[in-house]
Image (cartoon, rainbow over all chains, first blue to last red; front, side, top):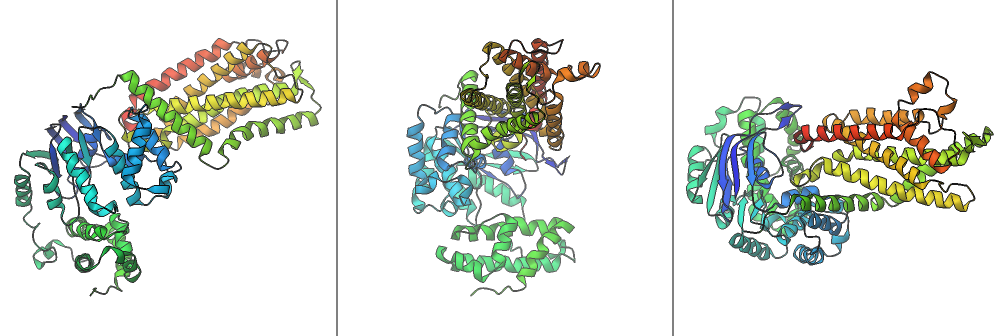
Length: 338
Length: 263
């Protein structure tokens, strides 16, 4: 059971307290519950998950966690880059009190992650998907009541050869323990509905619990009248300031291109694609994605549509414009794909 | 439900053990010749000043062989400085570990200080044994007194590190200032300048520095006939160390929330 009592949270931004992310949130998450956390961009989904995992402390209020949680995100953050995967795994085993059982756990991690010789190389040399794979394997090797998954796209990003294996593992996990998860990617709603029964809807710093996940999504959609509409429609254009209009139009153009790309390109072509379309890498950098697999193109499309465009359209500031300017010079060469 | 509770003592013990092993592996095998640096730094310092004093034809200081005087002082000072300097930066270096709720900000500091003390004991033994084989009279006549002095210096280093780590955690700029202070202490603690040759009243001022007491006590342990400056008191060093440790721990309790904030 994880209990949030009147939790307030804000971060220090530029040496000063930022705006409140959570405002007086009270919530109880029973153990063995499979919960999806939904909400618009910047509504505090990740913050809620970090508080639930105990990774961060609330600014005000209390989070009581009387259960064991597993969160791959915090494992992957704590890897010491100079130490090998094996050494890092050993450290985390010892830290979690599995010192006696270390060989057994180690072999389980090694088997699940399937890194081969790379397991003995420093984690600093790992690519992002490899690191994710290792942290996923780590969390599977421990006993826990609640598994916390922050935007973790099982099939797409971990690069497991056998995507079904990862899916089965997660499905089995939801039968034995609870899970709190957010998801991303084009099919995030389907992903969440696949693994979760209930939902927490985060809105204006407060949380609302829905026993049935579909009800949660209905409430969420009802609150966002524009969500289903095409962001490129002229209906929304009046929100955008005049200076921003060409930029937004171009990014919309890029996003449309991405949507097409995500339908026609298969996994093997991603590397070639990067050479052909230089802005693909650039835009990836801005939204924080390293393009390796097919799943990430879908993800990129989603992030541009759900995060980048709304920010630009509603609160586009000078900084944003500067940030995207370089990107746009790249886009001049943009050609719509086949 | 899985048994969610381990006892607090058990959690603390496993946390310290895990952190210690990780820090040890990292500092010994992090870089290709990381272990060499541990040995080389005190050796180079000792050799340089032995060369200087030999050139000046200083055969004895305070009644003992110059080489023994330098070695005893240098190794004692390094016991303090290594513990202080690296534990001071331990929080910054392990920011990512605070994602685990069982790791408190004081844990990496304590562990780093213990690790440095442990490594320094090994370095000290290696250096003393090798110079003994070389024919120097470096085997302490009163080993317990040497141990007492070294332990006091290590405690002082831990206290300095605990306070310093909070300061650096709140204001990273202070790391530079504190490091500079450690360099000044090198000259004010009688490592290379014998305190007994300093005239009155400046000598009394220097004796306010607790490290002087630790260093001179260590030399006295090596040779009981060493002329120590008047007013030498090992309990003065211990007093300082304990006060610093408690102030440091209190600061850690007070600022725990700020120190665990991610970078």
